[in-house]
Image (cartoon, rainbow, N blue to C red):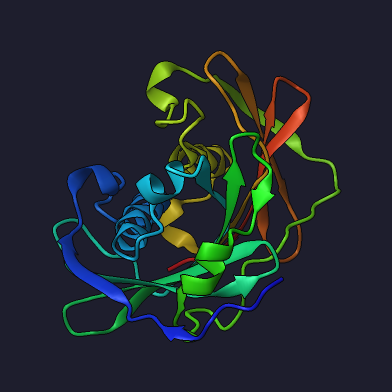
Length: 249
């Protein structure tokens, strides 16, 4: 792979209030809300850097989120003002890495995370466009000290519930919005007696797409270190795999 020029990227930051639709019944920001805010910031920053959604679409290319890892030190609460920061932090083979942090008004770290993105063409084949490699700015500061990892879980998992993908679940590409996978993961954990208030780390691998009418079956398992949730499409294809660490707060 051609190496990126070392163009220093400044973190993109803005202050936002935690909204009512981003919290759970106990007024704590939920995992889906954390992921949603970060992804909106990622889209905005990439557009400002001239390799956003519209910029790539002109070349029949698209961003695809493939992996995320989120670490929660303290959960932001409803109406709290937080500062969100995000920056492109490196290249890892085919993956463009973007990190993020949430801090409270005192500057204390609440949430940190990292994500892997790929650029694909209309046939969903990964691309490494020269104009992006040559121009992409990089900030070598790492929010987690590592890149998100590929997850593997081969033990037996139990079926918990199924959902049918409906119109309101879809994103602008007619695929299931990945935020739904975070929501269904927390629903699955709740069915097993685990509160999303106790989550301290979430690792998510996005493996396949779901479309309207697909049936997504949710599976759960637990090992000595973590909880595991998987979504399987139409009884055949693994759609996502999630590893969750939780501890009583």
